[in-house]
Length: 329
Image (cartoon, rainbow, N blue to C red; front, side, top):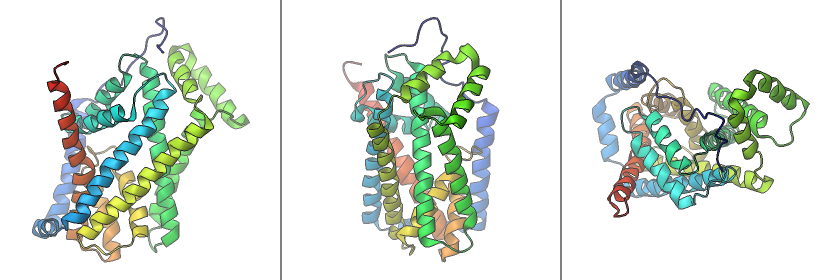
């Protein structure tokens, strides 16, 4: 499937200006510097050195399993746009994306490279962009849903702000999901679509066409996409719980369930690179309320970053190295 030649496809967005990227990196580094100024780094290092390797290994296995589940989810979304990727191929692309996120430009660089890799020889740029956007909405909706359920199971005192943030984020994502992708919209959604179409006009014809393609997903496929997303988040809760246990942090699985959602949402605030500093600050803020020391909370956040980002990025680097060294390249 290809876009019609007469329509100019804008392709991926341009990279953010250098000063924006430097500012975001600086903000993250400043937050980290403040945390390490207030929290003795010696205690953080000792907590990390004392981590039990067996639970960490289990968390690493879970992290790669999650990447496989999310690759299968994205494969199903890409199929609606004529892409024939296998789960294994998208799994490798996702790993490589994490690796390229370490390069200048951070996540923006990774996303752009992922975009072009997923587009392949189809050159259906807008279809790829819509599939990636749908994938992100599904992941965020289910992240918030899982977090809200765990929060309600525990009902921690003094943490209602976290629930409000989780529910507000979920509401925004659900509205976007319904407005864009619901195949049987009600009168309100239909009105919003007609109104937006008048403003958009014919210049974004390929956008509307790509969105219509996503709406062709069967109900079974849609349910499977969200089931895979929920399963990946539940596995993530288990992985984070294992990391807590490795550091001797005594909090329940239910607590980890909503704290994880809150921490990940904090990293989505676009004022740093890869959630640098935000993840650590959220961990200290949320976990110290359960009697966890600041050193252990900061060590836990750094261990999460290593298992879910650094380790995956290193694996992506190996994937890219093997790809470049293959004879047919």
